[in-house]
Amino acid sequence: MNTLIGIFSLLLTTLVLQNAVFSRALDITSLLILPAGRKSLWRFGLMLTGVTTIASVLATLVNPAIGQWEHARYLRPVVYVLLLAVLYGFACLLLNWKKRDWFHDHSAMLAMAFFNCAAYGAMALTVYSGFNWLEAAAFGLGIGLSFLLAVFLLEQGRRCMSICNIPKAFRGLPAELVYVGLISLSLYGLVGHQLAA
Image (cartoon, rainbow, N blue to C red):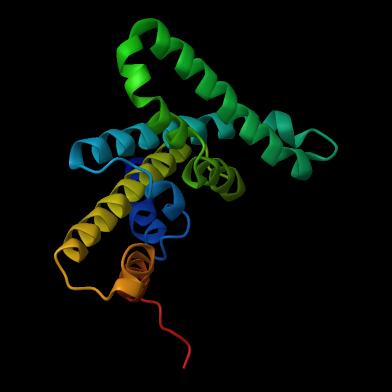
């Protein structure tokens, strides 16, 4: 029972803290090219959640073997990127074989889900935190869900800004960055941090 409570609290902590500053779970440059619409965002968020969960567990399982290498700290990031590439290749082969039409329609979105700061960050943070495979799965799930929450917050901001009279110089990316900054500060204050005076 204590393990279940610990995993649930880890999941909730990940959901809140990963969105606190939008830094670990939000890659704004790739979000700018995502297709609009709630259905597409849900699809991407679920893909990314699956990738972060599987990648976190895989990194935890592979880490003991990497730790025995002489220059493990230098080679670990390379191994993580290679693992993501292998997982991506396996997913592409499987989807191209079983669901060819779906794969061709969503291949760009699938590539963004695998090669994203959240996928690599999930692997690195899981290993450096020393989680076991069950905690790693909860942490990866939390990172994916927090990214999904961040995507919906950004999409809601875009929708609200589209009906506002924003000066021409601030339309697009500058307005989105101001919006993300304000949301980040409010979430950062919500979790109890104070800015230096």
